[in-house]
Image (cartoon, rainbow, N blue to C red):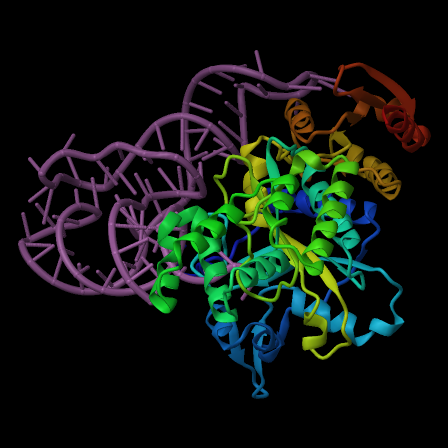
Length: 438
RNA sequence: GCGGCCAUAGCUCAGUUGGUUAGAGCACAAGAUUGUGAUUCUUGGGGUCGCGGGUUCGAAUCCCGUUGGCCGCCCCA
């Protein structure tokens, strides 16, 4: 039994698990289509350099990478963003703007599996290309909220924390920090929520302690939780760039509020999203109880298409993972249970009745109904039990008595009423029954 | 990559100071029941006790290693 186990962090999807996964995928697709996004797909295996180019060599430690039989350095995709940038970049001039695309796919990261994190997982990826302004963020964050809220999750269950790398860079520059120091401070900011003051340890070791008033100003910025507080804080700094950025913030928050999503979003500059390729607004979705890993993350990456060989093309995107999202839905009792769900169960008396029933079974199935019947002869009592467990609303009874009369008995399994219909009218009668039901 | 805890049936678990053929509930299957779904009862299949080695007359139990899981660190695109 234990001879051949699945690899660590790789999940096997038995039918009930796959039903739950498919439930996620359906909800995601529904939301994406409602927002006018088009679905695409791309290779699972990519050249290793695609990821090195974006994130540097150190990323290789977290990749499923190897040399293929043709001597190519390849990697299983750890994320969709570089791939979609290549796709869009290659045809950028032929694509209608705005380019709104999504995909659902499996991704692979060579990391230690933990709660909410596996080595193979699925992500719902959504991106908008070609829109430099916050209008794209409004549309995209709206979709992010809908992709979660569509499952019944409300503002009491999750929220989206909004932050801005552009503003951080402006602010830290105004405080007199150079580029290297800025990067170190953002690293500390990223960890501050979890570690408190220890988050600045690495900075202090590399660059010496921050001046007290500089650190106080950084912590004050970290404490900004509203647009009003943000404007008040930045007023003394001044400058055209900052004024323009604040206008973007007003547009973004105003747009999201007008969409009725105000309760779902919070200003929170503790989010900086690693240090990868983000250039502007960044955001992450979390459960309100703070028990789980991030449900989703995203942001603006205006330079990446160009960096990967395409034309300069502004972009903003996000991804939702299936693992944490599934945990959240389970926790909140929002994951349906998926049992067998036939429409019709056919009860069969014996071999003669069986061959009579087969023609009608085929006809019902051709009409799109989900039909089950016992593969082997079973006592009637047993068949009705199985019928009840199959989820069918209707049982068709093919017994000796009925066949002799040229009829089929229909039993409504919900109210246990029965009536007979002529054999030749069975398919129509059943179809009528379900039409009335819907 | 580092540290802590854990591993017995498909699932949840019991298993005495090391001692006969390793158990229960649930689930699954057959029957009681050859024309109507519940309940109940009877019966059955299913385990190299994660794997490998060691100690011992004797190991699910003790020791070492290993693999896997959970949790934390690193990382989180």
